[in-house]
Every structure is written in C-alpha cells, then in structure tokens.
Length: 275
Image (cartoon, rainbow, N blue to C red; front, side, top):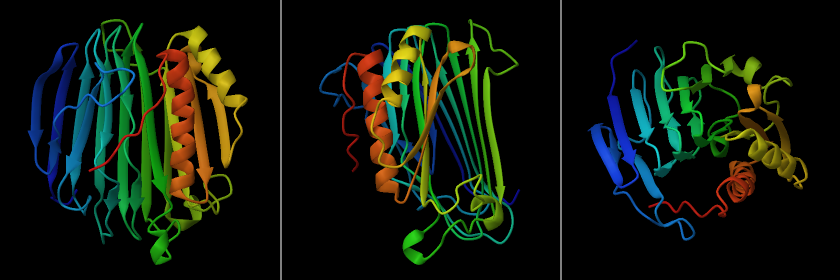
C-alpha cells in the first residue's frame, strides 16, 4: 500500500464519562457533549478529521468501547471524501465494542467516492449479551454535482457482527461483504443501478424488541426503496435504503433510527447538528 496519512482514534466511554483515549492526526475528538434532550446522560461524540478526506495511501483506524451502563452517540463532523488516485487505496477500519448494559449509536455522515478512487472499509461490531447497538452508514454514487455516477475504481465494504459473552468469538454472527470493481459492478441492477445514494441501519437488541422494531419499519411509509429483515439468531434487525439523493436517504435513515430508538430506549431520535 502506498504510504499516506495514518490516523488513529481509540476512546473508552464509561457511565461517568470518557475513559482512556488515544488520538493521532489527522483524526481528532471533539469535546463530549450532552445534547440529547430526552437522554441527557448520553455522551454525544463528534469524530473530526483534517485534510479534506482520504487520499491515496491514507488509513484511518477507529476503536470505540462502551462499558456497562454507558450510553454513547457517535457521529462524524462532516462527510468523508475519498479522492481520486492512480494506484494504491485508502482504507477505514472501525471496531465498535459494547459491553452488556451499554448502548452505542454510531451514525457517521456519508462517504463520497470520487472518480477512480479505491476505498476499503471494514466495520466490526462486538456486542456482549444485553448490549444495545444502532449502527449506520451511508454512501453517495460519487460527486454527483460534477457529473460522476458510480465511477469509483473499487469499493470494498465489509461489516461484521460478533455476539460475545465476555470472550472474543472467532466466528461472526453476521457478515455483509460487497466488493465493487468499477462502474459495471456499482451500476449493476443487482447492486445500485441508477440510485445516487444508499445507506444501511443495523440494530442489535433483545429479540422481542427487535421484532417490534422490524414490525414498525415494515408498516412505515417509504419515500425511497427500502428493504428490511431480521439478523441471524434473533439478535436484531437491519434495513437498507436506496434513493435519488443523499438527503432523501439520510432522512429516511433518521426516521427509521427514530422508530427503533423509541421502541428500544423510549426516546426519540434527535438532530445530530454539525459544526
């Protein structure tokens, strides 16, 4: 891999506030806020990055641990742009660890892949029994205002869910893997077709709550194309959104997050205001 910037962010969230932290530029951590009007003890965290996105050879590694009794809501300061490159790739690895009795909501802003970029993203969720996790991601088809549409050279995405009991399990409960090579793969009717944006929302919670969340999603009026299903072993549920604009997709993801939050946490979703 071509040498580039190597950002790292590790943060532990305790019920009383932040624990151990380690940050290396270009990543940085904003001050922890308490801006959820209905859950004031939730720690709202903004991950920031300098440099204007990921370029050839850049690598970001993020690890967020939420301890028992703690509640963290994590987002990014802005969208992440993946710049064009002539060789090599940029990568982003995120590991999310939630102890029993902990709550993590991870909803970053969109990934925007430029023409001829190569991007690898791996997201690993490790949740102990009794943990709650709401995890989202979203992507655009490119810099659509510049006429780009599924013009990335390669996008390699992997999401893993490990349900654990105080020990790290080797075999994940759930894996989603997609590797798109060029316009032909990205624009395929079985991939993203002519849609300009797509997003996912994974909810890990107790089986009874998961059934209620999935039922509420299926009865919700859709403004874009949506698919929803349960996760293996009754550990939660999952939805995918595809639409004609990132605003449309993000709005529907927010509404589904709101419905899940009301059922699981007894509180509505709130605006993740950006700086």
